Image (cartoon, rainbow, N blue to C red; front, side, top):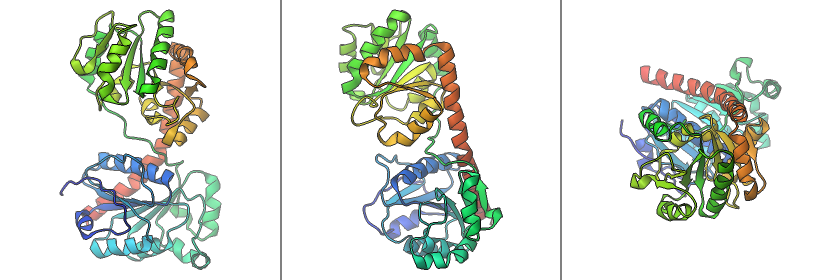
Length: 393
């Protein structure tokens, strides 16, 4: 099957060229609000990671910013009636399944897909909400066209059952969240870097914007008073800042710059990692991390689930940016340490580095990831089973 990349289009129509790229088995995912689109974007990445032979169409009125290009995924900003989209897809080649993360049921699309024998899966809808009174009146027929509704809790089941959805079509699996694919790393390189640092304690400042660099350097100076062998892995959000940041840090600390392959010595206090695609390596090496941008008005530059999924204790500010849901889930589980100002960063890092507290926080973060992953795995299994059935066909 040809491999292709994401396209984000600012109009309502699926072009013939785009339709031609959707080869079976393919899945149509649709969200009707931005948060759900973010969730489906992360979920679709997981699906393609597990099953690269599957292709998918992701649609929503508003797509996430900086949606990464992925082989197998087409992303379209879609404001038109999903019923028309369903008809276009069915005329081209019926999808293996449709997954809708919507607050209001897309009745036209559900009916069109259901009548064509396409499996219809729903998530995000806590109860059967209809877009119009006419749809509400035909709600019981609509329930017969739905394959499965994935609900977050037992409390959500009653409303669906009252509308006529069969008990067998309800699956309680927790809340689907924007859990990213776990960042990988080269294990041999991780071991070599650990040896280079002489197994010293490390903390990681991730995705740090220029306006927060001084606060991170000050925090490291404070932390060194408590542990003189401590080292900082400093990752600027803009890799081009590496040389300038090295010059700034070198006024106070012994530094090394990764892009120049400068060696790590027993005296190295700050390792500036001005590279891309290696955060999985740094999270694994660090006992604790500070998530950059969270002290600035623009908000966090990175999803905190990245760090939580790799066992790194998290320190952050009050500005969550577009990752507010992830931060809220982790904070509710007491899996992060929030600070109110840049001046508090040093003390917070020292506390987070304490072995007992770091282990407890990492465990709590992993529990959040594990719980959120239940919904991901349940829905993923249903979609892949349907795709496998289509291929076996």
